[in-house]
Structures are given as structure tokens and as C-alpha cells.
Length: 248
Image (cartoon, rainbow, N blue to C red):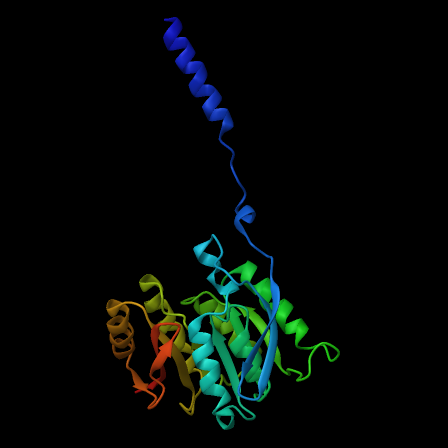
């Protein structure tokens, strides 16, 4: 009996030692001001240099797909001149900020509140004349969970008429999110009555199942997905490519 009592006491002590941690404990906000160069464009922004402990906070880093998309856009700035764009999964905002140097308006979106905080911090940095050499104009951040029609409609109410471009860099890494991603893309493509909106996707291949899945999903929603010639390349030991997606 005494041995059983001691065991029960020991179990109680173990239970008391268990600490329930708040989710914020895992948030790494030790952002560093970092310089990136794409063609003639220098961009400084705050970001992390290593992955967060929380898978949902991958947006705190600059990923290979963003480097690929920015290199492509910096060589094709004529595409962006005077246009409007919305970016999905903006993360720290490196692509949206580059585009804002040439576009009339850029809406950057993400679903995670912590990521939106750093996104807004980088927008503020690029709206401040004394901190930056090339000022960004018409740059805003909005919350958008893929597949959330209400949030898409709210954005379209603020920006009636839709956008010329939808941008996505390295946003295809979780299979469960792909149907919702392409559903959002279709809604945004359809918002332009003249059907001139295009989705530019910088895709990084990490799994053959994902390679097939994005093509199947686009086809299922009656969207045409075309590889941009000459964009297939190696980015940090991974194969990357630029796709342009339009309504059929």
C-alpha cells in the first residue's frame, strides 16, 4: 500500500511539472534587416534567416520561389508598369515590395496574424523616404485565408474591378491547401470582366505528387496553366519554373 501511495504521489508531482505554454512562446520575432538585389533593384526588409518552430509561420522567411519570381519580374518590369496586382501568401512581402516600384497598386495578403505584422512593418519601412532609396506606392496588406469567399469579396469591394495580376511565390507546399488556393485564384481571375487577369506562379518542385496535383487542380477548375519558356532553372538545389495561369 505504501509503495502504491508513493507511486501516486510521484505521478501527481510529474503532472504538476507539466507547463502549458502559450502559442506566442514559439513565435520568433528576431527579424533582421536584410538586403536583396534583383537586377537594378535593391530591397531591404525585415525577415528571419532560419525557419520558425511553427510550420504555420513559414512566411517569416524569404523562400527560393520568391527569389525566382523576383528575378523573373525584375527582367520583365514592362509587364508591371502601371498595373494592379494582388499577391497570395506574401510572407515578408519581398515580391509585393518589388512590384510596388512599378505597379500602380499592390495588395499583399497572408492568412497568419503574426506574418501580417511583419508584412505591415516592411510596408512601413518602404513608405518612409529617409529609410529607403526607392519609395513604394499603393502598397497595402490584407488578411486572406485561401478559399474564404467573404474575405475575397471584402478585398474586391476595396479594390473594385479586380487586378491585372495575381502573384504567388513558393506557395504550393501543402497538398491540403491546393484546392483552396486554386479556388481563390479562380475567384480573383473571374473578378475581371475582360478576363485579362493572369496568375503568375513561381513553382518550386519538392514532390512529384505536388507537380501533378497543381496541374490537375487547374484543369479541374477550367484554368489553363502554361510554363513560361526559359524560366525552368535550379534554385538552391531545387527545380523551379514560372507558370502563367488563365481562365480557359
